[in-house]
Image (cartoon, rainbow, N blue to C red; front, side):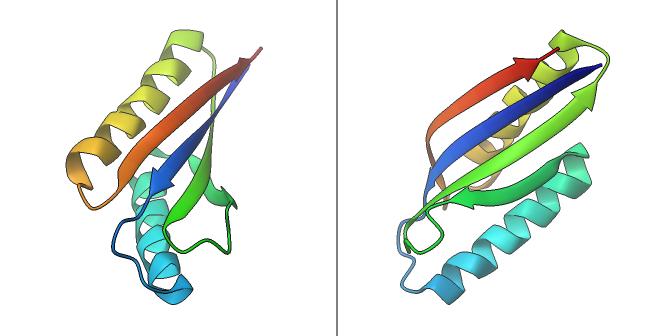
Length: 95
């Protein structure tokens, strides 16, 4: 069994309230869960309006598969969510 996690630092330019931030993140998290079948949640910077850290987790039998899924998620956010800026991301794989 292989477990992989990823933390993605996001900037949310133009967000003017925590309510707006939560709305954006709720939609993003639901979409990532549905499309990529991963566990996902906001894990840091809860009270900062224009920044967030989301965490993702994938369980698989293959290291390359988990790495590929998480890298695809980052690429998907960069391509399909131009309103969000991926500042940085970190992938950790646990065997």
